[in-house]
Length: 85
Image (cartoon, rainbow, N blue to C red; front, side, top):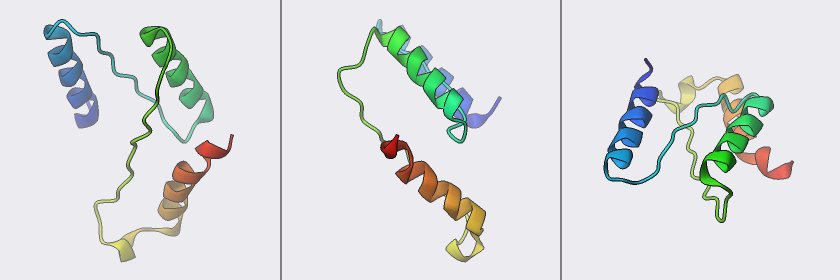
């Protein structure tokens, strides 16, 4: 199990234990069909959305000069492109 998946599962369990409603959804944001699917799953789980806070962060745990052009392009595309469709 990926550490991110474990952390999300742990957070959901903790929130649910408090009597609250929580779920975690996983998607590859390089694949638009997965992005749409995770959005639809969230809408279904929540019964709609009143507010969306887009607080995703992308980081590379390496010195900047070691980041490849492909990684940098993927990073900037994931930040700028979604707001345009």
